[in-house]
Amino acid sequence: MPDTKPTLAVVIPYFQRQAGLLRSAVESVLTQAGPFQVTVIVVDDSSPHPAEAELDDAWLSRGRVLLIRQPNAGPSAARNRGLDTLPHGTEYVAFLDSDDRWTESFASDAHQAFLDGADLFFADTVRFSEAQSRFNWAEDGRYRLSAQGHTAIGQDAQVFRFEGDFLDFLVHRSNVISSAFAYRLGCAPELRFNRALTYGEDRLFKLCLAGRCWRIGFSLRVGCTEGPGINIFDVLNPGSARALRLASDYIHVTRILLDSLALPHAQQAWLRRELARCRREWLFNARHALRLGTPELAGSLRLTLQRDPSPRNVNTADGVLPLAVLRDRLRPPPTA
Image (cartoon, rainbow, N blue to C red):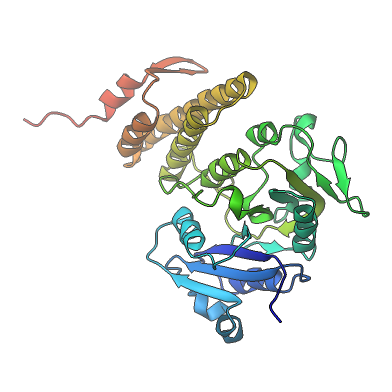
């Protein structure tokens, strides 16, 4: 008798040096209480620790896990490869980072929301070593998430229909993570991650997706525990190549959002302020990089001006810096 459960594909981009993380992530999906017919797609992005060492032969032989190998191209390309390889008939899609784990409630809560007609579902998460869950992180109380103002689904009052402007909620809040949401594939079958971005690609994807989803469901239960992987915001050194890339990518993300999404005036104004903050962040790191002699600075300047060609000056806390001055300082001296 054919399986009549709705089909869910879970894409895991994989690049790890530590053994055991991928196996734990995959098990957290496959051991869920079974409202879905689940396929896990692992995209091995030329990981130093190979994916084969983490996956049971039985998972692979039964088609519960599909393994794809590719030359290293980054998490965006890995997720896109997974999206390009979805099994025929896939109805719902989710993502899971290889050092994260779903809790036992994620699939059942998502199923409950989708039965209610949700196009997109997301759950609360707890980051490694953090006491508070992400739904309680926002300094502005308007963007914390609780039951207040939303419609309960079912009897346990933990899964809700989101009421209000979800896009506005996401624009102001970046801590709804990609490992804890799932969506109806038919809403955005062609949507892909931006491969030009090293950082912020998941934020851009979520906002573009939210613009195509009409009904949103969420769970107040913690649906995902985030692993101890390196958090880029914890290890950035001012003036480093990574800090320059992060600031440049966030400038790029914000410009794309302003240029491509039809947003109300208030959201556009908020994003313009965010763009100004990202520009100042890049300039702060550029000054440190100039002092440190970071070799990637010249390339970062060229890339950032290509992405964000309009500003000629950037307002800083101690005045206005013409970008042309910085460009001239980086120009190699004339040869004799």
